[in-house]
Image (tube, rainbow, N blue to C red; front, side, top):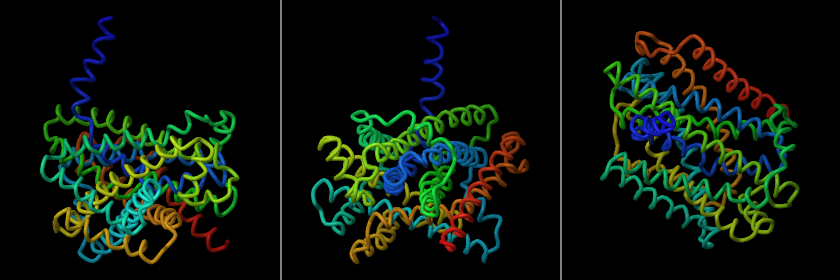
Length: 411
């Protein structure tokens, strides 16, 4: 009995107060780009690509933990450390690709939120994009005025809405267990399935989340210079990452299973609007409402975190700080332009995730090298096994991207 009481007490005092940064970073893993990629994969190929999400989420746990550890041990963000090791020309080029990735992220989040408002209230997409931008500014103002901890509370509340919204459909019509197990076997079914796999990977292991997690951990906990405090923070951060990414991974898999179970072979489900209509038809208006609310919460939360990430990238690589609210206004423009000219929103979401996938190696390779540098990390340097694990992750991501390029050209 004493042991049963001691474990929760240990968690309550030594772990729970330090949770939060990973849950903010995890919002990037359940943004509207994920919704589009996972619904499309499930509707077209059923359970075929479940293995992609499982593999991607396992990689995400390792990667996000490494990013947070880097920020805690060094007291600097990943972009700052990368920028300090580059000459001006390569540093500007690196910043340019990172900003393209951040722009693709913001595009997905604003468009996804606009689609949600259209589903809920019939709001025109352009007006919906403006509303999402305004609300995201209000969320950023929360961080500026009351601090990161309160910002984390708001984001976690939105994560709860996202989880309930996207998982509820599985409770009404559970997936086929045998089909789910068959989806754990790695395989593809042509060029289009590879494109979707890259899109799902880009939506799961997200470059801007890798960059920002080092800043979130550092800003929340500070530079862990004291060895004893460092060990404790790193251990608590491990719990933080595993818990947050478990939730995010479950949401992603639930989206694919929802589509595979209810949308396979249904005409018109290659768009979020069509998928929502099919969900309403198959599962009822209540589940359809929950789905739309989850999508709205996803767009609002992820666009705020994406703006935070963009500011971290700019500050670290250009050594310039601009107000988060001003950056929010600037990055809102491309998404609103696409909505104004009538680009298919679901197509834009999927393509934005492919762009993210190409940006992953640029974040992973420096993370691999920095966390394996004993002169920088000291006693917290990665073990040989972890360096090999990170190397395999970088290799798999790069190989998938090369295959995507080759198959797309040939196809």
